[in-house]
Length: 340
Image (tube, rainbow, N blue to C red; front, side, top):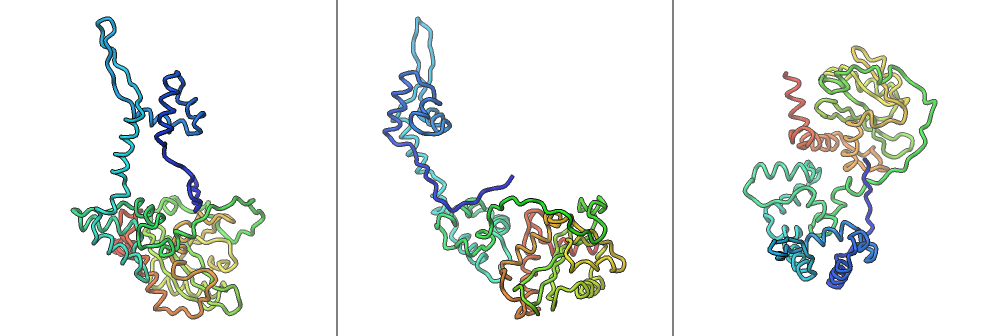
């Protein structure tokens, strides 16, 4: 299910004292919550919750028999509402550990940034269980509301996510080799180690422009990235051959770009090609590229990028505790897999 991210300010308002009085009058007339909602131009759930909030149990003696009933009172609903506002989650910020907030800001503004909000929260809570902290969701909400010194621009992926429009699937894309449909189940289910996804990160789309080759190991999500002078198929093959000397590479999953057309010529490695226009079939690599784009924005030339800079960026991502790995880093899991 896709999520729609919008910067449009919500127009919702809380019920007023006057509206609560109108609700009481309508209820006395025998109107149902759905009808009251239409009359007040409110959602029926809002009316139902308010009735439940402001109802009091009353007891009447009818012919010697006690009869219990729920009766709505506007002043009770208003009083409960005001008490709840005093306990609003936005007051959690005042009670939150100042050390937690200071270290959160430091971690998220460090360049290159190792932690995400979620990984920082989880690791901090493990190391300081007695301190009052904020949840990941609450922190994002506070950032959007401007309650923290951290801004959305400090988390580039936070401002890049947009709802994508549906496009018609293009057909007749050339198939370069073995289809991903023939990839073994142990690779599909990530139960086997040493199977990689490959892609390129481009800078400026001009001649004589360097590119970054990225590979991600499917089981551990450990990533490699190397700067190359161009995106020619021969250059890609030479780079992967060198990597085979240092890393276990048993299979590679690539897209149908011409730069990967000669991968099948590599010795001792199976190559599988994803379906055309199906980047989700190489999701681990696409996710890593998105994280790396924080340091290598689109449209920026990669020619000045040094090997040391790129290594720092990749290390920061590989050292990041990942939710999918129960907050262990890809680097640690890759090391364990190599010695298993």
